[in-house]
Length: 207
Ligand code: GRF
Image (tube, rainbow, N blue to C red; front, side):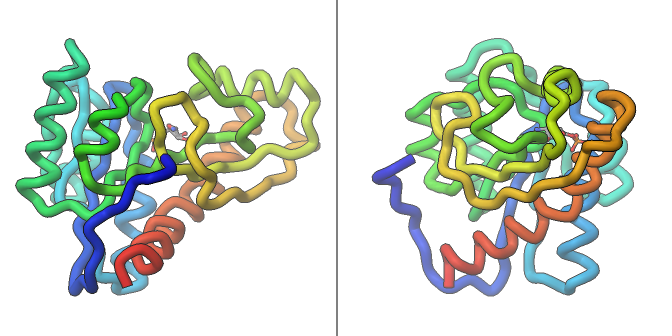
């Protein structure tokens, strides 16, 4: 969102947090954690938030030894207050959304004091907006007979999928025989792009 400035100074280690929902599988979380580890990057995922107790991402957090807070989303203001508390407490430098489906409020985006990135499984501005998540996206891409789909990583603003685009990558889906094929191909690309983009964004912003 135009006009936001973050408190930036040189960092020894970057703390990031991941905001997910009840449906999140945690595959992007795992891929980014592996990317940071394999490349020996000074990035630690200090916590994950899930909005349903039994969300599958909890098992991935257990496997990766990452704290996974359960904060039910009943009412936006209360939810956002709790997230801001954790962001401040853990000195978070960036918040990454992975499967979080609710709109964040303008005050949250301002008061969090950190950049918030989201990953979207299509080439925005196509196939974005309310209700466009998961298989709904891939179904539309397949039904439209698009030859390409892809991944978009963008800053979060108060409108669904409309923040500034940070990174985008295309993948050929012309030979996919159904929407599930499209979904697999896009997810593979998501896993390659999110960790790398977060790292590049952090180093650009805080160096
Ligand atoms: C991803 O497909 C991402 O594009 C979307 O939510 C999904 C999260 O998947 N925003 P996972 O939980 O990382 O497997």
